[in-house]
Image 1 (tube, one colour):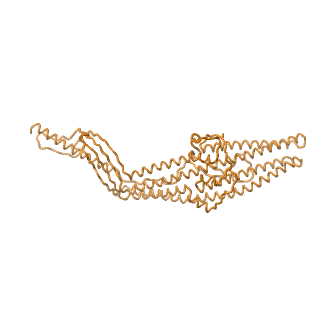
Image 2 (cartoon, helix red, strand yellow):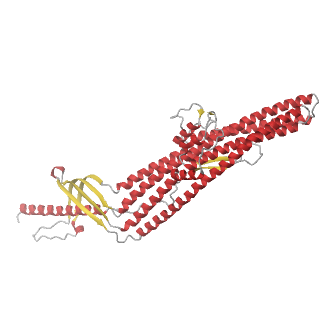
Image 3 (cartoon, helix red, strand yellow):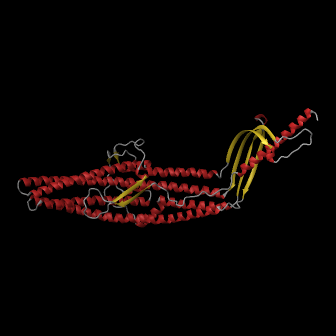
Length: 520
């Protein structure tokens, strides 16, 4: 064989081998891409469906600072913890005039309280998870531009070729050679019940988070409303303490005049002075309590942590709107956002359980690619691949059984939490009504007690001025009046807190707040 002919044959054989090698490589890569999807797996849910709020808002009984102890009255307080105690700065976007109404305080807190912000962002995060779960059901399209420079060892592909031509042999290593590939690929799930139920579960989880954000709004209203009422009650105690101090100072002055004229002994003058100093100490304590409660309120609504502002609303005693316990329970079951969130969590767990069981079912998907491939862009030719894959799970190493067991446990837990919440809602409503009944009776009794105590004090002062009795009787009457006024303030505060607690127990507290708290 002449030299040129031998060179031509060698080149032709080499090109053919390279073409076969490229075809084998492309086929292997395509098969690997088609099989890389694997099988769908149920997305695991946490065991508990209750939102992990980093804080709470509850009502409880607590002592009142700087008050006298007369009778055991209801002394409720709204206890706020965690994220609900803080806020972002609202003054930058909502200018503040230095006067804060209850309506403005609630609106600021709904927008800027950290507890509400956290649950709103959790709902936004859940919305992103829905989009991720949905992507498994929608087409996935990618574009690739690749330039490959390669040298192939044919022996690794099992080539054992020999040419019966003297002086001619096929090289075991071919290349280096290069080619470019412009390609678009698409994968589409046709039938995959696991992926479909994962998507449905994520949608229910999103609904649960949205309802949890609404429930957090009710908690914010309870926290801010309670803090505002505490400031009102604290300021009422200060007003009462000022009146008691004025009375004590007048008594001291009268006693001093009588002592200087020799009508009373020194002990009476000392007792009246002690009473005046005691009232002054009580006033200092109560003023300090007002300042602290205003700082707490400011932190809840996003204002600077200072007491240098005024509240503009007063919430006097007003009867509860006509509403029976049965009607209240029906409203609560219809409106409570946390109950709707718990129900959505049950549905999410049911979908997750269905997704886990669907891991045992076949799934169908299609994929394909189309593009231009060649040694350079000018010589590129169109190639394509189209494939349909039916995956039949046979044995996954026990993973499917484990997923089903986890999903079933989460479903049972969330059903139990839903039943527990229904009982808790009924307890919340009934407790609020009990507190309302007790507070209503205390308001009526304390009003009568204030009137009687005031009449007793007036009579004692007249008897003292007439010299019939000493000033100890006046001091005791004054203490009785102070206690009665304090009891009235506490009773009105307890009644308003009970109505606020009932508004939260019914749901939609922000909307129903004007109905329950009549402001002046």
